Structure formats: structure tokens, C-alpha cells
Amino acid sequence: MPFGNYSELALALTRWIDRTDRASEIADYVTLVEKDAGRRLGLRDQDKVTTGTLLAGAEYLETPPGILYPRQLVFTTDPPVAVEIVSLVRLEEVRVNGAGQAAPVYAAVDGTNPATFATRIRVAPLPTAASTPYRLYYTDAIVPLTAAANYLLTVAPDLYLYGCLDQNARFDRQIAPDGTTQWTELYLREVESVRKLEWRARAKAGTLKARPRHWVYGIPLILSAANFLV
Image 1 (tube, one colour):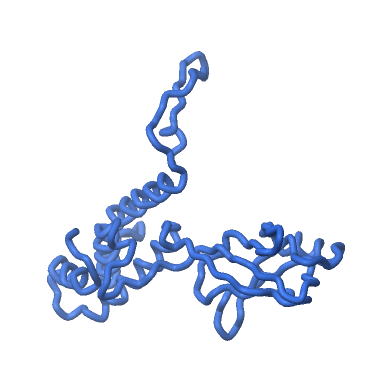
Image 2 (cartoon, rainbow, N blue to C red):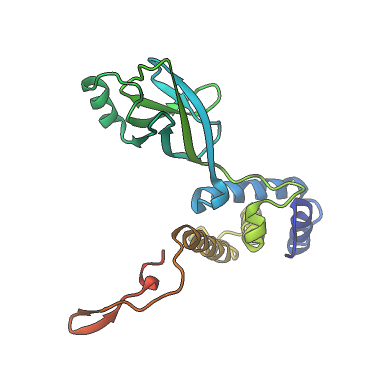
């Protein structure tokens, strides 16, 4: 790997841009790349889980501050209850028409805590049990790069490099009329490459295999897993 931590990446960027006075800007570039990549990629490393307890009559639970979005909520009762995450409109219908029960069966994202910016999750019907333990699966932001390598730098050091060079070109106002820089295409290419890598890991696509023939406008078409790669 060409660089294994923040300091080595910063040194490489200093060489690439041929500037020694951009330490503060490089820190900004790295943060911006991490935020952008985190929203685009959904890395395995961003999959997190937290636990908590919902008290009787409680309408909201809060996620850890800074998460991107919740994926699944499970009340770890006996038996466990997997809660469907729906729209606020649907949740309100359930809240108005549904009776209270030991554990809710629906949830919806409903704003944030104004003090911590933690995402609030509203549940319905309201729980009647004194305390209901839950497990929340969510997608978190990318762990910031420090003296130790994070997951993203380990699997895609080139994404960090091209992304930071793209940010540096924008800092220098080297932007084409279409809003790109000379590094944008390389950065987006690496984003797409990592996104496919993560998709394959989750989907366990395995070896590509030929499928039965289908005919489209009289032309035989062989379908394989490659037709459905995102």
C-alpha cells in the first residue's frame, strides 16, 4: 500500500501538488473526501449496531449522534419483533388507529435532537411493557483517518488520493465549466469501483454463470450475473 495512515497520505499529497504550505487545507480535503465517500458508498465498515431500552409509553428513541441513516430496528423481546421502518404518514395512521402493545411494530425517522443532532426514531403503537430492549442497525459515517489506517484507506488508497487532489484543484479554482477538475473522473471511477466491491461482498455474487436463453426481438440473449451488476 503506498500510504498507510494520515501522515503518509498527507506527505504523498504534498508531493503530488508540489506545495509544502497546505497542511491545514489537506486536513480539510481528507474530511471532505470522507464525508462524500461515506454518503456514496455504504461500506461494510459503516454497518454498525447499538442497543438500548424503550420505556413504557415512550414515543421516541435516539440514534448515536452523526449516523447517516437507520437500517433495521429489532425489539429483542421473547420472541423478537422486527420493526418495519415506514413513512411518518403511515406511522401516524398506526398511532391513531392502533392500540398499545408490549412492543411497537412500526417506526419512522422523525427529525433530530436539536442539541445533539442525533436522529430521532418515532415508534407506534406506544409500548406498554415497563421496558423493552432493542437493537438498532444503522449506517454510520466513515471512521476518520488518523495515525492508524481506516477501512477505506486499506481497500482504496487511490480513492483518498484522487479525491484530495480533486479538492485541491477546486481550492485553486481549477474548475472546468461543467464543474469538474482534472481529477474528478479518476475519483468518481474509484468510488464506483469500491461501490461494486462492497456490493459483491454483500450479495456474494460468486462465479458468473450462464443462464437459460431468452429471446429479445428475435435475438438470443444470455443472462448472467454480469447483467445485474450495479
